[in-house]
Amino acid sequence: MIEYILMLVIVLSAFLIVQNGLSKIGLMKRMMAPLNKEFAKAYQYGHPAADSFASGSKKHPANRFFIEVPQ
Image 1: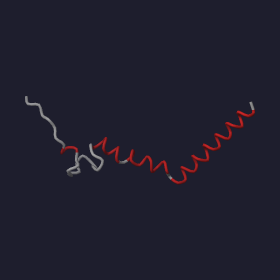
Image 2: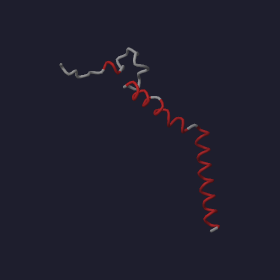
Image 3: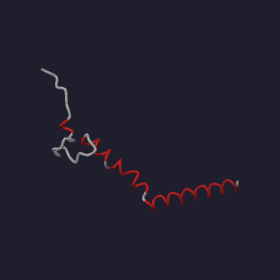
Image 4: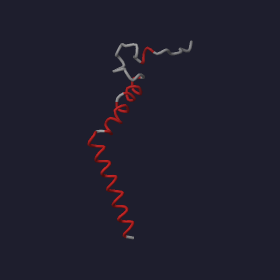
């Protein structure tokens, strides 16, 4: 039983050391940057380079083509 507790302590210590090292170099922030910036803008505005709905650029989602159904 003591062997399992010792093994658990070693694995947990290794995990904490790796996690601390990753947080010091800021790897998680760099990995999350596309999710927080480009993907968020693409989801919200329709294009990753759009800043707002009123940006007025060719990348603006309102400049996409829509099919209108005749009435």
